Length: 105
Image (tube, rainbow, N blue to C red; front, side):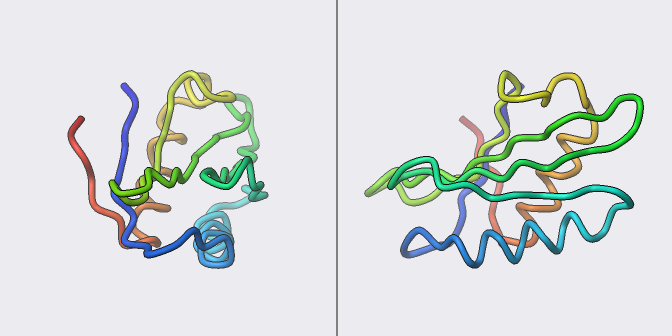
């Protein structure tokens, strides 16, 4: 199941996302992260998770214009399904760092 959180931003804020993503990655041995701009309305974090069940966790922040900003864990992105619980844990941690609130869609 995909998961989303409302991010309390007024504008797209790559530096804040990079800082939050580095803080999350720093809490886990061997986890690294890169943040990429994927358009005017999307920033994506790619967390590299080591180990047998490792892979890439992809989490994106979207600008939905009048509806604000959302952080999204999309299970069909990168290796999100393959890394299982790690994807959910990293998403929760990033949401907490961004002071985001869960959304029920």
